[in-house]
Image 1 (cartoon, helix red, strand yellow):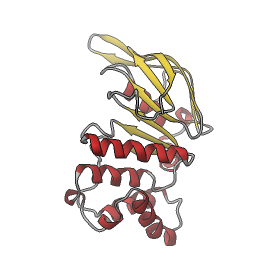
Image 2 (spheres, one colour):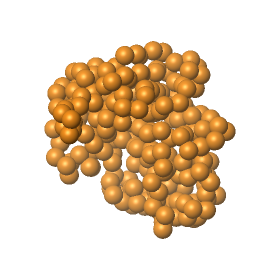
Image 3 (cartoon, rainbow, N blue to C red):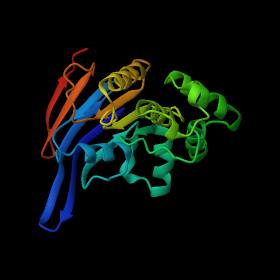
Image 4 (cartoon, rainbow, N blue to C red):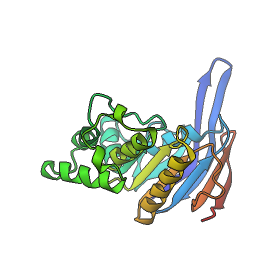
Length: 227
């Protein structure tokens, strides 16, 4: 599902070049539940950006679901991303003036891969899946933090992408809601989605299949998780 080969990313700075990723080799199979961990500045966010096509490598190749994403034009990349990768942000990024249902429908309208007559029923089914069907017609501000994160996950699932990437998805949640979000991710992986969570939290007992560790832009650990 994901294959990074010799991926390097260098950013220019006022004090010279900074190597954010240094010759990363990583393969992730369909249905794996993977945590990417490391300290601030270790390269986690840059790696996430490689997986989603937001950044292009300066060296090496990134093949995501069979596509060399860095060879796509910006317009083709946006279409590819909408159909292949669902992104869950730490701060939810829901549109505040739209209802939860409308937020999900907008994601479907943008990509245009779900038939129009199926969009509303599908959106309601996804909200049922993540446990907030009763909040479909509410604005994001009316929901708790945990509920908003579930809404963000529902939006990421709108177009049935094979890959789900989450950037610090539980950083603003209490332990109960964080555990519930982890359980939902594990369920989705069990149903065949490839789920990658970028986090700084302790993942030793969170049920991940693999724990990938970055340090100073290098992959220094790739271990099996503890169920």
